[in-house]
Length: 203
Length: 203
DNA sequence: CCACTAAGGGAACTGTGGTTTCGTTAGTGC
DNA sequence: GCACTAACGAAACCACAGTTCCCTTAGTGG
Image (cartoon, rainbow over all chains, first blue to last red; front, side, top):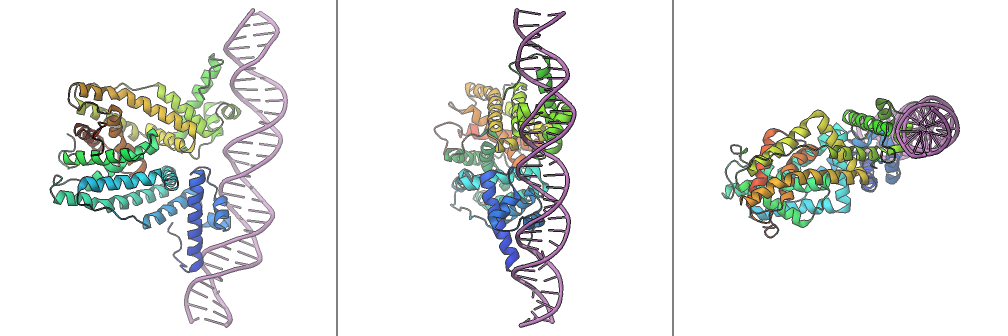
């Protein structure tokens, strides 16, 4: 998977970068299905043999693309107020999903994850990292006594994203700013009510 | 799409039923990609020409399968308590997603929706119906003054499902009963806080 | 019960996504 | 700067999903 180890010098890395970029472009244009590795090779100005040898399948290529995406991360907000931080997070996710390129890319990799275990593994790792990046703002809110002790920070962050992805993938309703703000507000309200503490989870 | 209109007599309907059942089986076994219409035809004991003629593509077949699934609906709970009703809904969804056959089927049709506009249309219609079926329990809670006036009932129901689908499709964490109960509790808490009323949505 | 035609099906055909072969290029280590 | 070999790439090759052709079956209407 993480290719380019044995011979880190110029070419290998260059080819990988070109192919991953081309794969992103093709994924955005055609979607996960209808993705032709020969087409990716052409875009990357690389022999198709190379693509098949190094990545093998569409899913394998997407998995590598995801590990690459996981490396570049966005900074999180830190406004000193839980609801503001959550809203910043929600709006960041919302903008990402609405962006023509990013949105298509995310849909594609999520689809890939349902088709291939390696892609699934890469996707889950990706989100584990992204969520972990934002948990500190929940933990700070707990420390400030804005939220109950023992609040599951990761679960609060997940609660912010969930409605956005649900709309994107399942119901098809627009993922607009109002939706993002509502998601943030809902997560904050639920967290305040102690829904994300281990003890009172089911009530 | 909705095939079988012009000649409703025996054979047409029989073939459709056999093919849709076979499609479901194949979808569960192989997933949306790797679905071979010839294989579906074989399972349904039907000529592959027929499948290609009537449905054309994998996505078209899935779209028809979805409209078929939309017709059989499950009864909703009515316990007289919002949180109980929401929990019943959450657990129903949870059981569906965890069930090996149903879960795989839902993943497959959601994937299909990201690949084909007709499948997307069918999926959105399907969920619109499912959600509308459950809105009455929120409306009753509003009438009982358990929730603020003007609460967006559909949004509350969506809020219950969202975390379950998010886990299933995005983060890959287990979709267990505790998750379902937490989702119901969170939706109820947010609704109580007035997050789903038009006026105070963004605060 | 018969003529009519919508729908189904077997088999041959084709185009494209993926594989194999083998010669070429370019980082690596001394 | 030279020998070594990992990695690349062009072209021929292959298999099979999807299409076409044309004949057969079976609901429908009188």
